[in-house]
Length: 497
Image (tube, rainbow, N blue to C red; front, side, top):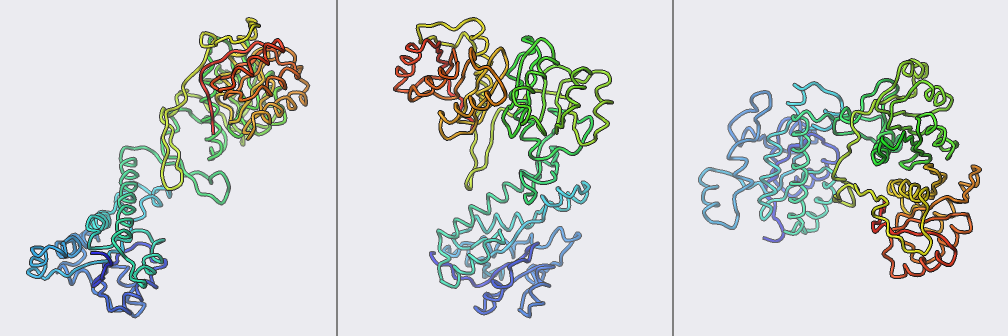
């Protein structure tokens, strides 16, 4: 059965937007229309004849509307096979009409959830008949067409007018319908499993709606401050992922995050020293940033932090007097870290599908470094290179990080050229008065040419860590030998897009 010949249609929708043109076309083509409740009222007000589903089933809408369409006369009309004589005989025997077009959507469970409705109301927004009708029509796409998205009304109408509602199109609508019911069921199961959904003020921009599905308390407890936003959560995730790669046994690590990248980070013996160094990396970008430390915040450091504006401060604890100090400014949020763990599988929607990947948990240490130059790195350079490769992993590609004495003195982030990333890092370091001489450099990916080695040497870089893997690795290695720079290969690339 190629082009569908529609004799009867069943229409039962929550949202009536855009429905009128397709209903009028059905009337013009003398196609019978069955409908329920509010949809039937809507069609009748247009002056278009419509048959009540109750007249077909012989039962009224019962149990407060919970049962309207769940009847063999309806599902038989949708599911019987038009090319099987046995099915046609049974349909005639039981006076079951052929229902060839099904236009049905679902109760607004997601919208009701975002409104913060009570459980009783949420349960009533679990659609049963709608899901069943959609799945039935989608299963029998050989003989029916399911329209479960109001955005498809215009498309389906155009196809009907042109006589092009063929099998390929019907199969597409069926697949889309199953995807919708799957998503709907997933949302319900998450709700019933008590996986909370938190509406957010807005998304990346004020015109975008946003919400978080999951339990934020697993990672942190908010002690004070304003509501956490979509952008805050992106920065919080970046901050926790970054800081978790630094061992508390090595000292206190303090980082300042802006737009998912560290604009300052340092490890020192005390939280106060680490904060000072992290802030000095880029005091301009630190304004309005997200701050995180892997040690508790004591009052001395808090008094320094209090002098600048920040959005959020995360730490595993806050010592006496800190909460009282920060409570004087209500716009700043304090979060006590409960766990440094983040999702092991990363998910991203793309095009009309999804991408999944394992989290990048790889951390390279000196035992992974392969010395490829004549000059060996000093003990301090090795220590700084270990710091730098941890940091560059969490920096947007193309990325270059400059480190000196366990402090990031600059970074080049999100550039389309690795040379641009290095030049950005060098100019930024100079702008904030850093002496680059003796600093080390880490790259998130290999050097295809020796240009970055030359530029780094000219700025004062004395040691480099890079993954290696280019067919021209030898060019960079030879240039490093020529200039007297130590270079180690880590063997692992860390793109972050």
